[in-house]
Image (cartoon, helix red, strand yellow):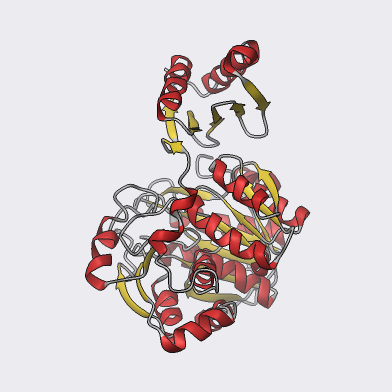
Length: 459
C-alpha cells in the first residue's frame, strides 16, 4: 500500500488517507500489538480529529480504553509513553510534509514502530482483510492534559548557570511554531522560565499559512529573521509542525546551519562529560566530527534516519545525537529526539561560564570553515537507475584513487568518498527515485569542479 513508508504511515488526506483506512488501521495495530495501555494525540493537520476518532473507535470497540492527549508534539508523545508506561503511543501527524498530507506514527514498548519491525505486518493484516467481533464491553476515551508536566520536565534540565543569569538579565526570544502542535508548549515553557518572548505562528492551523512547514526551506525563516532586529532578540527558533526538529536564528537574523549549533552544544557537553559518545549522521558537516575529536569525545558515525541514530545511541550509551535535518537526540529523553530539549541545551550553552554575555552571532562563526552547497537532489525516471549511478561513481573513484588523491571509500549509507581536497556522500532516497548528494571542501573552485564531474554521472 502506498501509505506505508519506512518510518510512518503517510498520504494525502481525503484521498489515500481516509477515516475508513484509519478505522482499519486501528484494528490492525491493536491485533498486532495486543496493547492494553494506549495514548493517542495529534498535531494541527487537517482531518486530525476525524482520523483520531476513527482510529480510537476501532480500539474502544474491542473493549480497550484510550487516553486522549489532545494536540501534542511527537517528542511529547514519546516522553509520555516512556514516563507513564504506555505500551502504545499513537500520533496523527505528517511532520513537515505539505498541508495536503496527514498520517500516523507509533511508539510501541518505548521503541518507534517502523516498517521493517512491525508496520509491514500491520499492512499485511489490512490487505488480508480483518474480521473480528465487537467486544460486549466498549472501552472509554479519557482525556488527560500532560503539557504542564512535560514543560516541568524540560525546565528541570535548564542549568544552574541559566538560573543565575536569568535572575539579573533579560533573554529575548522569538518563537515560531510553524502553525503546528507546539504553540501551547512553547508559551508555557517561555513563561514559567522568565524569558521575554514574541510568538510567531504558534496558532495551530493545518493550512500552515505562516510559511512552508519544513524549517529547512529557504523561505521558512524570512519573517522570523526580519523581526529579530525589531524585537532586539538574542535568538529565535522555528519548530516544525510535530515539534521534533528545530532551527535557530541568531541575534542578527542569520538562519543558522544546524551542525554549527550542534558543535556549540557538543563543545559545552564534552567539557563536563569527557570522552562521551556523540552520534551523528554520515552526511554531517566535516567540522562536526572534528569538533567532537578536538574536544576528546567519541565520534560515532551513523546511517541517516531516526532508527539508525537511536540504535547507535543505545549501543554506544551516547550523550547526544544529531542529524543535518535538525533532529537532535538526548540520553535524558530515552534517546528520543526533541526540538524543545535542544532549545534547553542551547540556552544552557549561551548562559555557560564560557559564553555568558556573548552574542549568539559571534559564537558559531568559528565552525564556518568549509564550503558547502547543501543537499542536492537528482531525480530519475526509474528507481533502479539510482543504484546504477552509485555503482558508476564508486567505480570512477576506485579506478582513479591516485589521480584523485582518494583517502577513503565507504558504503555505510550510499557511497562516501574522502579525498585530499574534498569529501562527498551520494545516497539513495528511501521513498522516491532520487539521489541525494552532499559535497564539501575548503576551496570553492575545487568543490564545483568535483560537483561538475559527478554530474556527468547524475545527469
